[in-house]
Every structure is written in C-alpha cells, then in structure tokens.
Image 1: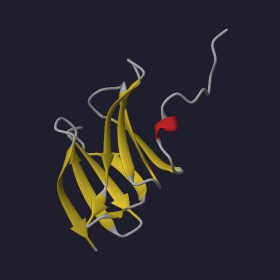
Image 2: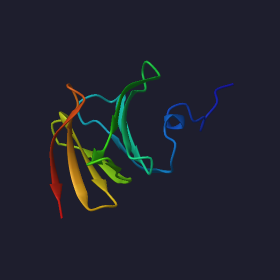
Image 3: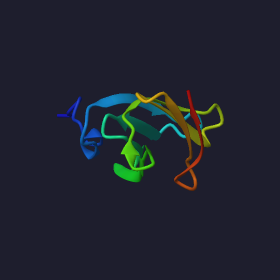
Image 4: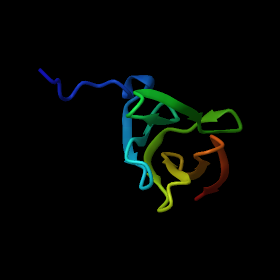
Length: 101
C-alpha cells in the first residue's frame, strides 16, 4: 500500500516552514523556507537535500517567510520577516544579491 502525506524533506528545518515552491524547469526540484532562517533545495526524485542556505546579515539570522523560483528556475527569491529579499543562485548555492526595505 502506498503511503501519502509522509514528510521526508521538511524535517531538515529547525523552525516552522513558511513557504514551499517548485522549480519551473525541473518538476522534481523544490525549495522551502522557514523561521530558522534557512532556504533548502531538494530533489524529490532522489529524495535528498541538495543545498541549505542560511540567510544572515551582520550575524543576525533572518526568519524566512516566503520562497519562490524565478521564471527560468535559475534563482530563488526568499523574503524575510526583517523585510529583506535575498536572491540565491540555484547552481552556485550562494546569495547573489539582496534588497532591504
């Protein structure tokens, strides 16, 4: 019997998961953002964590409240409770720019 609803991926977060987004270019690739300040990238096909990125500025962890892929799937946009928008390059696994409001 096939199990549905089993959480295999989001256990990699230490805080409440606030957002999940699926890649527009790879149906098995998705990301999540949580109140632990992390943005995680996963492969559902291989059932593994591919990348974990901690959003921080000057030593202060930022709580992630939403994530979204860009239309070409090359970057992840992550917004924080501190009104910051971080842009993460999916291939390199690093923040390429950020905007504070």
